[in-house]
Image (cartoon, rainbow, N blue to C red; front, top):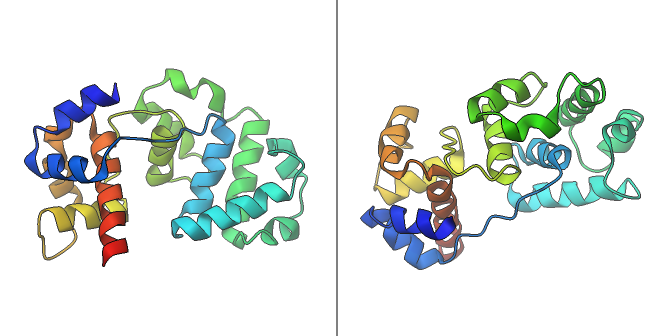
Length: 201
């Protein structure tokens, strides 16, 4: 599937250049949907390195990756010791409680459309559209997600098109229309190109 997507996206000259620079498309999917959602919450407004550090400390609080009931019964202070903010502790607890009570049925999400999944997930405190979109990309492997609110995507498009300001939602959607139905893949390449540029810069 990725080869088909890359062949399609190379029709865009600007994206073709990035694809050539970055190389193979590789996304590591997190198969545990609960873990994927916790990772997405932890990642909010943090650099990749900071989020990875907190995720690691969070996991070390438990013998194995926790179940929702394990998190519910963990004190807030213990969760805070992993580097989680008070707000993120509340979000992770709310997620865990909604899964435990079966109000949120994460194991059946894969059978739903992208928009249905976003609507279902955003009932959890702290899970907005961006977090739900990260779940679609990194847990379910959906290929046509365009996270228009993502700062990395905005910065990447700004650089790619030599814009003076960060693009607005409508501008991103218009540019990305030619990438459909592989907007996730295009987004990933733009993220990677931005990472390479920032490392060189």
